[in-house]
Image (tube, rainbow, N blue to C red; front, side):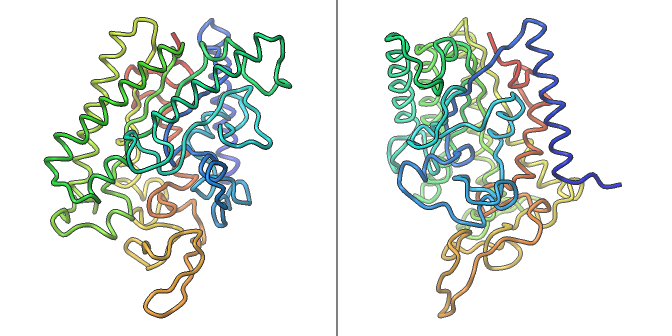
Amino acid sequence: MMVPWAALISALLVAAVGRNIGVAASGGCHISAIFNFGDSNSDTGGQVAGLGLSSLLPNGETFFKRPAGRVCDGRLIIDFLSEGMQLPFLSPYLESVGSNFSHGANFAINGATVSRTGNTFPLPVQIDQFKRFKARVLDIISRGENGGNLLPTWEAFEKGLYTIDIGQNDIFHAFTGNLALHQIINFVIPQTVDDIKSHLKDLYSEGGRNFVVHNTGPLGCLPRILAGIRSDLSELDKNGCAVAYNNASQTFNALLKAACTQLTSNLPQATIVYVDIYSIKYALIANASQYGIEHPLAACCGYGGLPYNFNDKVRCAQTEGNVNGSVVIAGSCKNPSKSANWDGTHYTERANFLVWSEIMSSKYSHPPLSPYQACY
């Protein structure tokens, strides 16, 4: 008998909570707050709040039943992580109304890069926002106030989990900037990883001790990339993914893993768990039928039909556009749970859940710890 999708998620989340409680009871991690940094893969509404943008359906249709600031039909990996820790979803740092920061804050922004060039809220700005956030919270605490119980405690900053998922946009922009592949691999990527390493040290100097760092997924398997690929980068692998983009992703990931290993040696009080998101996501593409995924290289919410269902002029949630003189609609597919990709760039809720489940197995982590065990 097929288990309903929602029931399956609930059951596995309950199991994850049980594992978390067991760790805490045995004297392990007592993580009560998450501080997240990144791009759209973990943005829970920062771009919408910070830039005054509207979040439109069909985004959010599967879980929230309304737009919820996420570029997805439902929950993101960071949402499943929060639920598994029995924490509410993270409020965006830039959301001024209705936010509860007692369990942490989300500084991630859609479109963010590591580099300062090209976007409003790159990683260094997110780090600066965190510093101000922490300073303001500690100032309020020092004056004997509690912020209406909506702010983290002093201990939360020291024992909280710092999660980082960024770098994808830096690689993407390098390709769209018409740089040669050797320039991207030999110059852009090493500099990007060096910058991430520097920012991790910065967070450590601010008291952060427990880190989970995601590498980047297989860019060459994204419908957005495949639909607009340059002719000189058009070689595809056996699963239909662009070789050059995936080579760049893997180069980034190898350097990032080495950087995390080095930082672990240099920062004696830090636990840094490096998570191989690339391998998990690539498996969803390569073994799609095993997961019940149909057309793994096609966007669920898009326009254009197979093989990629992506048109840069008519994107998901931009409900109409003018293509060759005709008005068209980029709507959602009938069953997003059978799709890996949501809108050409981001993953569906079900794919995010599958990725989160593999993260929890620790098989793709170095050292082999789940996020619930990433504590010093």
